Length: 207
Image (cartoon, rainbow, N blue to C red; front, side, top):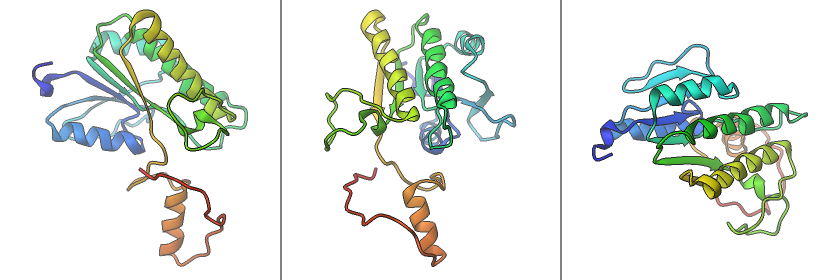
């Protein structure tokens, strides 16, 4: 990887909130990443290659990794929110999709796999959270993320898969989903509408 511009970088979820920023930064460094998307219509973006894929299909994940042979993988794909009362969607996409991708990568010489964790993995423990706290997820979403990340760490322990996990807390910025707190707050302010919220006594470190 002496020439970063020729590094084969795979970005899953590159059309999502955080993924779009990551992809844009890569292209600014003259890196042309391969970006996976669930969208049936693959977007057009200069200096980016897109592929429509369902990572919950193990065969598709294997084919993708075998054909592209990524040197670096930024696994940012996943679903969030509270629209999955059974947890099936979270389990399939956040956990099974991750398992399929990691199992495919385990057979390769990938140099680095970067994954996104979640503050929700810590559950209702005393704040501030620290990295050495055990995962105590309480929601379907948190469980799916905790299971996926533990699976990755187990592969690191057993086979040395080079995994790094970032738990990015309360990220915000342009293009953030409308359902998020700051997006709603700003929108209500611009429209001069009443915004129902708590007393605001919680402590948050917005990123």
